[in-house]
Image (cartoon, rainbow, N blue to C red; front, side, top):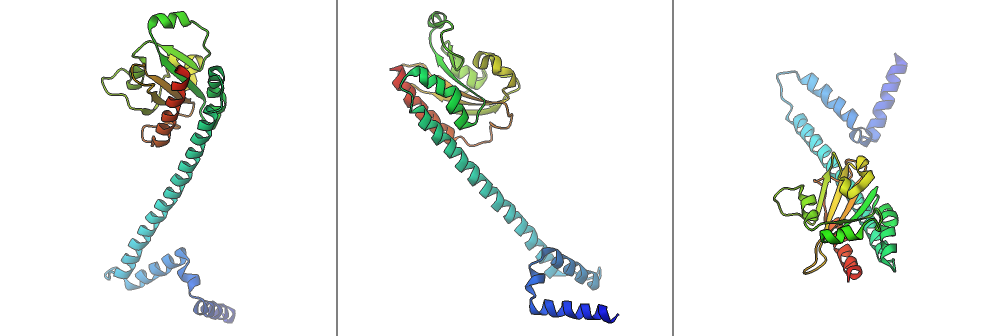
Length: 235
């Protein structure tokens, strides 16, 4: 008994000398408040305890928001760096063949996507004449394909950037890779007056990589840069 009393006195002295040890420990404070409410009985309302519970809940929400903001900031910074690296790669090629090679290698790696396709519209006769000389990264389609593909055939105006998850990817765009593409980013390209539009397609195996709820500012910037580079090649 004397040892227990000694331990209690020692603990009391430590708390009195440094009360912050208790105040900074959330679990200890909860236990003390619960013990105080138990002593008060069921017929007495402890307003101070209720206020502390509400403050604690509010603090938890603020901490969750703080963590979410920090995570979003890091994610945005990482995305910005990816797009900037991809733009620098797009500016390097001295020929259109090198440009196409970079799209499905270095640019795809910078953007961390599994598949890149460049869709260009032209007349049906030209499509037939072109044949198979273009590699897999480039798709030549008939006029109207880009808008129809973006809107999935619905009577709506196509946006510059469309993010979506796909259950069955288009074989016209992805070829044999269509079976493992589960989300995609569609960047509509404007090549100038009296020119048919194009489309830069970024495909991913991860169904959550591109979702309609995500922001599109960085991809809009990428589309603007890509348009200007393509106008140089098309001229």
